[in-house]
Length: 575
Image 1 (tube, rainbow, N blue to C red):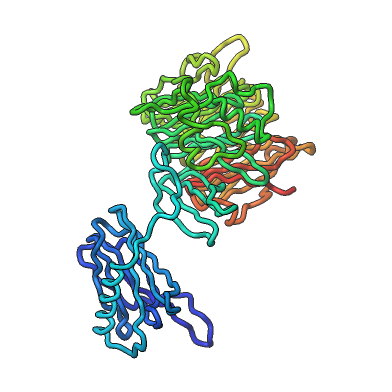
Image 2: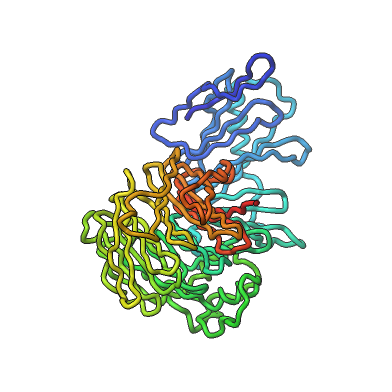
């Protein structure tokens, strides 16, 4: 366990570098927790270390080196948390309090009191004083539970792993799943307050509700979450799917229905419960004739099950779904599931991509593949959930993304074989047929997107380029792009925004390093693209961007993005 000391440079300026001054050997035991403070009535530092042998080691400094003074026993399992606190003793002197938390389920308090009239002591005398003080503290008063925060049983939080005092009237705690809970002392009582929630692992997919009123996100933390506005903030409104597999993508079929894929062979379809309809109506996010009364109010996951089942009976005894505010973390984890209404089978390997047609009538999926037999796109009717036509063949490796053009007449598929394939549908046929294919890039193609007004699409590749292609003319002339945008990093995500009144089109590009670029073009000159904006590091991501999606509100210039840095971001661009 290394100890480092900050040094001060010459000329009175602070040097921010650190120098290693000492390394404490802990043998075969691993240090799990640490705290440092000054001894009472002294400037000498006291270092407390919790190890994997259930003991707490106290170190004092002798000269410029720390030496072990006392080994405290009392806990029966690993000591995972240590914290010092200075407080006033009964006689008005300063005492030092050490709090230790252990996996044995206990918290112990240890107190050191200064010796009156103490002069400079040797290290041995100081060790004896520490041992006497801590032994005396074992006979001190009993501390009782003044207030309990959180819930006992029935919640999917996995327990708390840490907590902090924000100030004397506010506490925040966090759990294994990345969510936080906050309480404030208001009107002489502790009440739960809104806290930050979010994914605990990389987020692989996002999609806007058709009208842009809220957003769904899928993460490999095995959850699908819905986020919506509440005043000036965006908060988590529901956690409709908590799964046993990593969630890869979710896409809306309507404002109250979505499909999702996970690291399994099944596509699942979910329908909103009455509690979500009432919540969004109450918050003013959506107001329509559907008041949720004809829907199951909530859903749950049966023991040992993976499918959300609608709860019809005894709802009031299990949850209280009526909320006039965005749900708190415990409510999100336990009472905001959506009933699963359908499972769609077809692929032989784990799902990798999901998209929905512009008209919300077709679902397109693909799976992991190392052969042409499985590197297909399967289409399903979004109403009956039955296969639509034959699988679309052409790729030889995994199809990473699919996209429908403005009138669903064309389907574009890109993949790890570095190619894109275009499939077309005739009005008289319920079938898509291959039109043209092109080996477009030198590396894997991660994403693709169509313009909203014309049959022009873009492909984003790891070869550090985004290429723009024109599909409106003769297919034989589509072997060359009409524009190539060269980048400093591999392109991992791309999306077009509808043209504004002047005909300007914006294209958002996400990169491997987390950067997001906005390029500008026009409907009349689709071959000419220029860098319009590069998001500053404070607004962009810090890791691989998985998806970018413009909000489908013509009057709002907002962009949603998700990343391997565990975050979903919604940014508003000022014109």
